Image 1 (cartoon, helix red, strand yellow):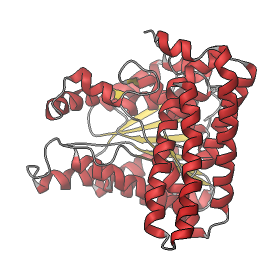
Image 2 (tube, one colour):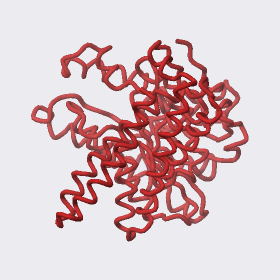
Image 3 (cartoon, one colour):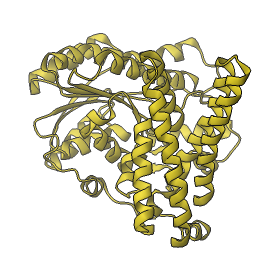
Image 4 (cartoon, helix red, strand yellow):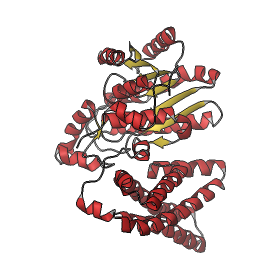
Length: 413
């Protein structure tokens, strides 16, 4: 399967070198993997890039960006050290005068069971992954608030991953940190913050971890990768696809304030996910079947509108909880679900099979999450609603909503 390169992807997403012109982006862990490709992407978009990296590979990325016509500087940094982070703040401002975009990307991980991993592993992982991000926010946020302008991103991953407990716990904490920061900033600070979930991405660090984890899961490396593959990719997502989706979210950070976003959303929006080659799947996406799928999609839209209305009528804390639950369980906010279904309905009406085939695999994956969300909501209701008649009525409504997802899934599967 052939894939597009980073610049081709950015261009196809409607991005240009003017989008971040005059901005300064600081990326911790920018010397390798996702951080490296994101640094290249933001530089191509016009940003001056600060590569905060503990390894000397940061200099290689600086040189690469300059060879591509961008502007970048490598500042050797240990994000777990407050002294090193203060030096990063000082040097970045001496060179560029400000930082507009802070990407808390630096991570380490340790592999092993909870019973076997020493406390030192937990301390090291939390110091880099969590407290490194906290230090960055505390240092760079005040100036952003003074200028009423900025973007801050924390990066999450699947919670509760076996044999990666310190890493997984730190990523869950980063998700919570991102939510707390968004709540504190509100909608009018001028600062946009969101949480990014990359998924399984083809990087050297990722491959090394997956090779070590596969035997612990009692599967081969290829089988392990298939467990986490999504979006139609043949295994792990190529790093340039992740970086381009990430870069799009940064450019449009205001739209994603307070949300979790993954690279599949922007990639799917522009039809950049791989097309399905499986014959059975192609047959299920016939022009004829689009008519019944359209009806099912319209039915689901009505359900989602009802959910949005109900959520909007809740008190502040209940509304925030509900919004977080939807984003966490289904990968999309309620409004993003409505926007996604609107896009799908438009494709069905236009009988645009070619474009839809690029979204099909991703749509199936998030619809399954939405259906599971309604199943989990039933259990939530049983815990909260004590009156039997009210509970019975609530469960009927939730089941109707779950069924609307099931109908669309059946049409598309």
